[in-house]
Amino acid sequence: MSKKIEGFSKFSKAEKIEWVTQLHFDNPENAKKLISGYSHSNPSIQKLHDEFVENSLTNFYLPLGVAPNFLINGINYTIPMAIEESSVIAAASKSAKFWASRGGFKANVIGTEKIGHVHFLFKGNTEKLNLFFKTKKQSLLESTSSITENMRNRGGGIKRIILLDKTDLMEEYFQLHLTFETVDSMGANFINSCLEQIAKTLQSAALEYDDFNEEEKQIEVVMSILSNYVPGCIVHASVSCPIEQLEETKDLSSQAFAEKFIKAVEVAQKETYRAVTHNKGIMNGIDAVVMATGNDFRAVEAAAHAYASKDGIYSSLSNAYIEDNYFFFEIKLPLALGTVGGLTQLHPLVKWSMELLGNPNSRTLMEVIAVAGLAQNFAAIQSLVTSGIQRGHMKMHLLNILNQKKATEDQKEKAIVYFKTNTVSHSSVSDFLKSNS
Ligand code: MEV
Figure 1 (tube, helix red, strand yellow):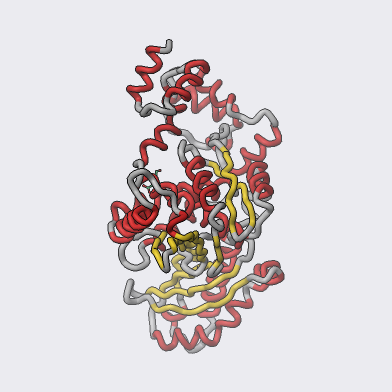
Figure 2 (cartoon, protein in one colour; figure 1 turned 90 degrees about the vertical axis):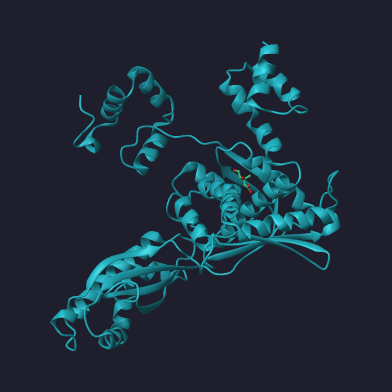
């Protein structure tokens, strides 16, 4: 049988599973069993999941855990995190607890603007195009009035529209650059609907514009789409404490720890290889909460990394310094999030996560998520400049190794006790299992 297929999406779910498993697996019955084992026991929840995407066969599970003790702007949060990496929630929880007894995290939203463009080609006189835009600007905006009505009632809508000459990048290339406020929704659908309408109005207005010659009337819209680069949708989060309140280790005084910590951040600010790993650690915290709250982690990732490069080199999203004997650690990054729309009202676990956070609005969620990133980054650098990352990491990874090696429950219990004081590695776990079989 060929692995090429026409009309797959029209198959029933059972037919899809049959086709996929028969053609791609050595043991189709086992593959089928596995797939159905991950289907939800409640058919209406499964149906809901199936309706999120095309060709859904089953569910792909990730652990959903919580990191308690986050004190943010004086409020206590227990933060939901959906993530597979063993040490992330442990690190977040450790950081949260540490900073809760030192005044907690401060966070504030700096801006919430989103951006979208109509990218178009115009062959002709730029002065005439500028004049055309000036004359038609209001009608371009008004043509979206039925789309923007609800958003305007909620305090959002289109904030600005400008014409940008991009012919230095590409021949005949211009943009309508629009700035949006989408309040508590991420706003992708809203923005794209507005842009598509404006693009149509742009083209029809050009056709009827008497001052354009025949060529100028034919504006070619290349595409109309939001930008996931959102340097105007920014949140800042920070922690600080007197240096002497930082933990001492046997090798480092609190002053030496602060200085080494700052050096580690400076390396990430100046050196791309380190910056990428440093920011990856930040995104461990951010993505886990973005996922748990049903937000678009791809958009958040893309925006964060573009922002990290805004000064011409890819750099750290966080910063640390000492001032007046205080240690300061902060992060600033873009986060385009929604707390209404999308999956937020649909996915039962997203609803659950939102309630756990006290049903925040999008600004509060931006603050919570930026804090999760900062906390994660603090825990990583703290380990890196003291014990090294592997001690904590491997301890958290122990259960994965035990499961891989098919340890019994009894062996697992014993191993957890044994490896409290012994170094975890694949070979040390194998040795342990051999002597405890
Ligand atoms: C691992 O997922 C993340 C870290 O590598 C981050 C870092 O190095 O800062 C520990």
